[in-house]
Picture (tube, rainbow, N blue to C red):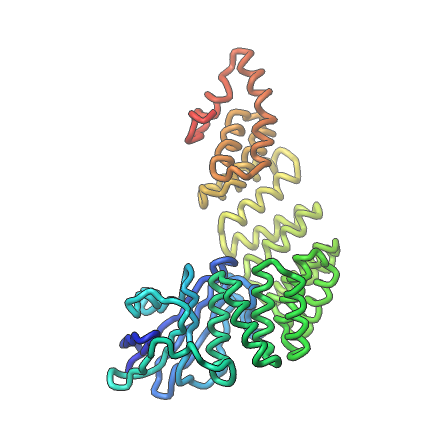
Length: 423
């Protein structure tokens, strides 16, 4: 017994009993993984995971949040086969076994185009035949509609929004009751930045299936793109009612901030933390809300918890900013220590150099501050605040040079800026 992959006349058999399907959304950078077992009864989906949400790939209500991944175990019978859509654009499905991943193209030994790949259990004698062009004249109805939807989802996930729109438009013409097609086309319209048409399609999908939380969340996101945040709050509230989950609460908290209801945003984030108390991301989110409302000690407490749970660079950066905004000398030293730690963990983080530059400037260490602003710009030339801060320092550095002190170029180089010749 093996695992067969068939596409456009090519069939390959892998001798595996368990494997992971994985892919990355090329635009939203959302990670998706599925663990499968090969059983005599069929292909059994054991666990699914997604890191991030949106783009129509939200987790179900039963998902739990573990280390920023939503995880759940689908309750479904083994499947005789699975159809994988391939857009032929950048990125594709990956098959992972024993910690090693291969793309579908690598498995099949050929570059995939738009044709789907059939995955099923077989052996060498019963391997399925995949005839080139077999899908060209398939009717968009019944069992073939699922294949077309898989292609549309794949096109959308790989960033081919026009391809996804075209496929789903054909499905809708043949099957105007297909809520999934309206949803995917709505997502494609969002990718094409046509938010009004996206709203029309989400309206249609909701009329057909009014109890699906993700549809309200998707429509809310489209309202948000149109800066209609009050309508976004309305839809996110319905999504929360249907699916009281971390993802929905987080979405609504962000919308509440847009309409200046910080109190309600904090309520949602606190509720989400109750559902996922080990999520560092949620503590960072709530800490940011506290910090933006001058509740710096509460922000620092949340960042402390986030760092205890997951000591990543962004948490040190955020806590350093809260210390800096408190404004006294002792807290300035705490801020510097946090910025140092953030840079030690991620020396490509331009904002950490910019923020450390501000703290050094306030301590009177102008040469080191100038060096940090320069490094921030070297890493991210579009970080305009770093340019503004460095430009504001230039007259002071010139005055110091006029008094016989080292020039700002010399001070910057001495402080460790890597590309001194640029100044």
